Picture 1 (cartoon, rainbow, N blue to C red):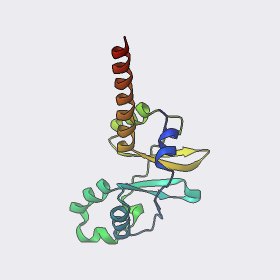
Picture 2: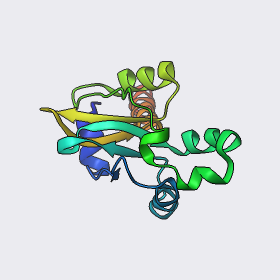
Picture 3: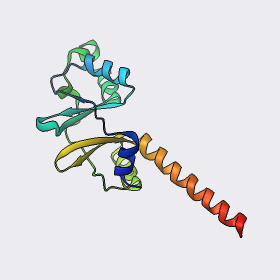
Picture 4: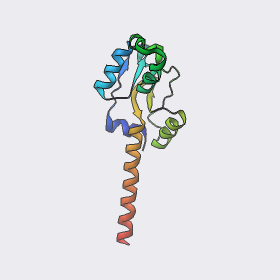
Length: 143
């Protein structure tokens, strides 16, 4: 299965934030939307960075209460790894595992068209494995 199939099933909505958005607003957005990261959008919605719950939690010991007044651009990961709709589930799982991150923006034609999470990839991969197991059981039972 390719990323395009995941996006077709889950949707292409991407939650973005401006680089100047206060961390306090990002925290509320993450909680209210039930998501783990926002894309910090640059010009033309091209990712300038990505900011996850993990980034915020890891910054707490260093910045304390001041953290909530900081901006997305202060904490975001600037070197954003992306994929395309043609990447396979196995490829995106490998990218995320090796990079030790959980969200992967999807870019097509220079535009942000979706975000894939490790949860999305695992869910679809498990579905594939269950379908394969079912097919094998049917084959064995009919033989």
